[in-house]
Length: 596
Image (cartoon, rainbow, N blue to C red; front, top):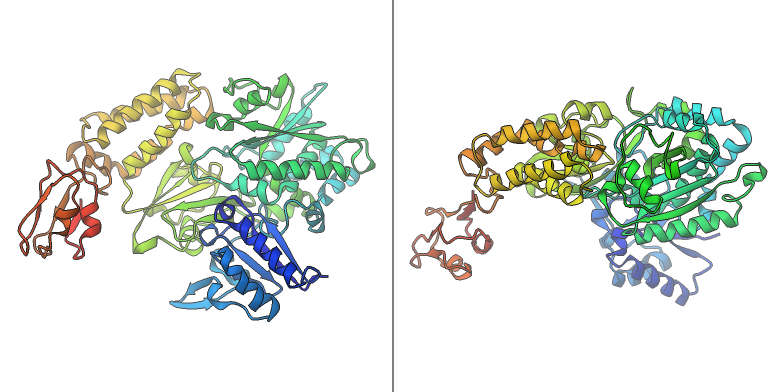
């Protein structure tokens, strides 16, 4: 029995900030002090509060140490673990009511409005130790399904729970399972979409890194329900930690008889293999993903037939994404009513978001459906840094849309987001402030879509390229009357005619920014001005004569000699020479230089 547990984040974010060296140092010092029998160091998955990583939590006190460096470990061991004194200057401080409070995980504002279901074990257990997963009710749901429930009862439970696919489309998970169950074939497959290609999204990666057995257990339950004995997890090769932990988890599950032949002494057999993706965004689309699993070029194909009828190798295939599967064991264990009690009438349960952009608390968030955008941004995310104004939040990645400040109180659920021109997507939520140009944001996402288009259909291959060319002209100051109408016509055509869901949703960032920020497009086109001062070719950097002290620092740092004047007199900028690099703004100590 250990008297203390030291939990250290081993997710990708913290690993990139030397958390493995932190773990190594803890283990060295604990061994040197003869504390191996008293203190256990646990490498976990992501705690969620990525902004404050690397994170170390010491139990039983629950001391939450943030932004720890390897050199901090010596003090934590000598003071906290040996002498029982918390190292207060390393503890995360949560600002509340204008005051600073020492805190632990249980009362940090970032976590208070969260409810963890899919992320329940992330940051809690060692993902490479199956015994820890089992200690937290792991594989109980699979045992219950196999020994106490019929296949029809499992499917009915998932249907009644109201769980909808977390990969973006939001289709009923139970209905999808039922379609695969009813398909007649000599072989069926279960597949997991762990491709996750949206910019700024890392929800699925964190689940796979922090709780891989939950996905394996859920896939086995799905295999039993639909009549399959073979599963495939499709995960991008750029997720090496996730891939490694999946491999370890699969080997452990096989060793324990939880994958393979006659699981729990029944006649049900099921095994899982990993398929690595090469990072093509289009392989997040279900038919392209299944084609890639077969070893072919990942391109979408027309539907119907849907994968539940004709999927991998032409056989019925049941496909869900990582987050969807992560909910399944808890639904089977606790019941459909438990899950359905969370969320809204048409959007049940919780949703995981990767919160990023202009936000104080970047990280991973799981909230009940129906939580408002304002609560996520301000109560959980901590608001906008530097006192800047909230401008928009992008949800759904390249397939989604922008939510303006006027819709901050919109509940986050499938239907509410669709109603305002955005979508849930897989769960990326990128926050933007007053310094972001919404035309440039639309261009950024369209650039991504153009680069990632598989090229199979003309609307996506050619149409998005034409839209991007118009946006590039607009942000370069070469926009023309009629450009907005051309964008809308192209967007409407692409949405109606593209082959797959990715192509059909590619115009969404443009359409949503036109809907809420049309004035910015018009300013770029007709006034040759970027209201946010972001687009370099439209920006003007000026010196306010009443603020300029004539110190000459700005002229000295200007790389192109665009600034001239006499010392102790106001300086001026030659706009024909200025390259808008901003070096003068950074150097000015009097706030006299602005970008407009």
